[in-house]
Image 1 (cartoon, each protein chain N blue to C red):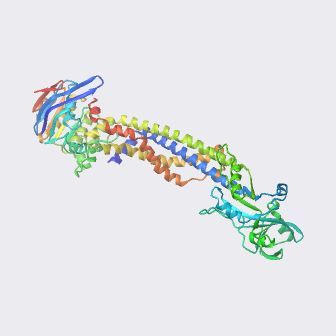
Image 2 (cartoon, rainbow over the protein chains, first blue to last red):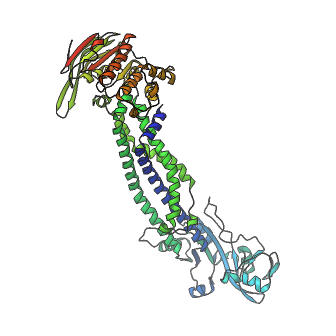
Length: 381
Length: 219
């Protein structure tokens, strides 16, 4: 009977229902569009950062920087064990971590860069796709230019500094000095160069550990690193990724600032509409009371209506929110449209939160409906 | 059937206290048709709502069917009202978004009674000459038809008592006679009727006429 009364009343007082529904749809659509776009922005920032390569390079402290920037790697070395120290230090945040040893050598009458790469280390419990090659022992990856000039093929056996290697893959063109590199496992390269236990660079990604606006994250990182790795120094690629991350954080701040106002405004609107509904139905409530309807049943009429509005509003709000994110997100938030994808967990959240929100907004009017004296309305004739 | 013992009702307003009922003593027997007459604002509606368990008396006892209705909690009182008392109001108070059958069956939402079904409602509407209006909403009906639908809503629970507040106040004489006639029919079947009115339309059927003035009664 209660559900029937709710549905019939909704059909009878369409304007009140439509306005309440619009309020819920607006609130949910705003939340969904903002959250979806912010999430897309976050994912794009992560992808952008990854695509740009490692953004933190830890090299031996006494590296000659002129030579470093000319050759692309340090001519000095540091202990391989530094990687473990870096990992053990809890204050560093990183996503991918790898140690390398690079040296320029002559091979088959060509000047090449031999690079040994250790397996990537990840913070415990996290699984991420590898940033570089997973190289098996006694295998090598050959840069494009090198492979082309020496007519090397996949699975071919080659001798490098007296040791046999199978070519796992000849790489495609990159347009950088990567095209004259030979990639092999770190331990193999250390052995070839008689540099066991030595490396000349630790690379890390996603040290975007942004601190307060007034603090320089690199300075803080350097201070921390000096304590752990005294013979190393750090270089950071200050890239647009940082700017993107700052932009995203700023969006989050705006969101945190605006959302309470939005919630409050729509809560007041829904509450006001519910209050109007109660006023309009005073005599109906009185009659229902006279017919023996108790407080719970009267409350169900109003809260049930609010919940129905919340459920319908959540579904439409989710669809419209995603539509808004796709239509306006790329322009407003400077994010690629294809990164904007519906977050279906938001639909579930909306279906739970919106009815709850609508019921809370209608709570005070419902209490007024329950507590108003039916005799007073029935005597008003 | 209905006993009022030293019942008074005082409303507290911004302009001070208003005594709507002044230490009223009243006894209405089972099967009696009582008319309470008095001018507007004399406390007639207050008296009726107090008897109906809708308005708690400030002092005194209200006993209906041997139940001190304001000594029981609100939930039990609502149940008692749903099972025993039929209300008819001057303004009809049908629910505007329900059709006549649905309005008549409204008490089914509170009373567990299998006989409260659509066929029973339609049978009752036939008796009240409303068969043609079964699926009409109140806005599509005349005042007389609406009031008869309200009487059907009151009758469907088989109440022991009907409390009618100015039931003919908004009706033309022809419809007023018909409505009073239906109340008389209920009375003839053994029901108790209390009608409060400022007119004399119901006098011819009344076993007793009580006059209410300034919250006090005289017979």
